[in-house]
View 1 (cartoon, one colour):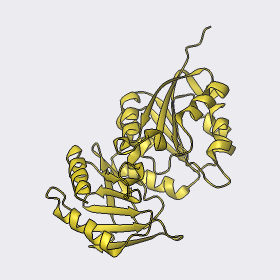
View 2 (cartoon, one colour):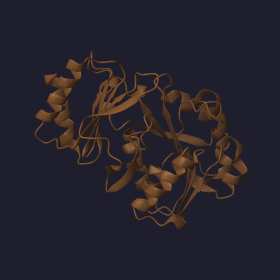
View 3 (cartoon, one colour):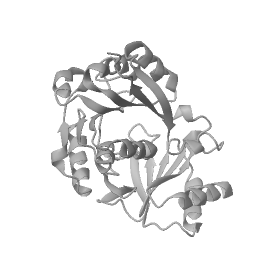
View 4 (cartoon, one colour):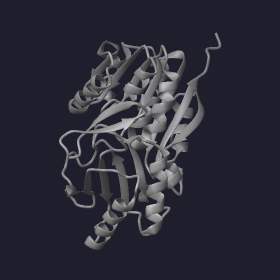
Length: 304
């Protein structure tokens, strides 16, 4: 546990933003693979993927209280190992209003939504890249969820962003996130579509200079990565401008970057692989390929 205190202290010094303080699921620390600690000041969120003793939890809280630079009001404990996950406050209370903060932007959180609280910390480097490359670009954000990537693009002075997600509730939060960051809503659209059935409606707002594909690994019958990802890839050429950039994301411990590279090679060969960006906390993973992979492709210039 002394090592845990040291790791959290070091990660706390790296940024003033919301961040992951400990990522046991990266499997670098034997015996703590079930533990994740995230900090959304002033709220600490502990997630357990395996049942733990009260003694373990008490010792963990003592460690958190002992870190001098860590100031918080609430410690929340999420029990993800249960068939119906639970969230409890072990210090303070569950806040009705909570925010993630990153690079000057703010995002609404809903801690009572156990599976996904509204913001993914692992995508921080992807958002930073998108902000850097979006000036004057038309961006398509597929599987946009609560639209953090749209905010990054518009902060980077994108011409426009089209956000597509089948969840109206997620898009509603996304719209609120834009307002929270004082972003002009006239530059963005929120389309509550089943992507796989809506290509004509999505295409009409193009051609796009940047396309972001950030799907869940498994979205029930509507989308499965291994079954459906290629269907998006093969549509890219007709929807994009001559020098378009595609940001293709994959978050599965069972599929590597090569899975996406092979899909592009077969179904969209005009898109050339440039680089892969790993999770913001890949330094806490024994193998970064087990976590988030953000692959960047660039369209070949026409040979006409």
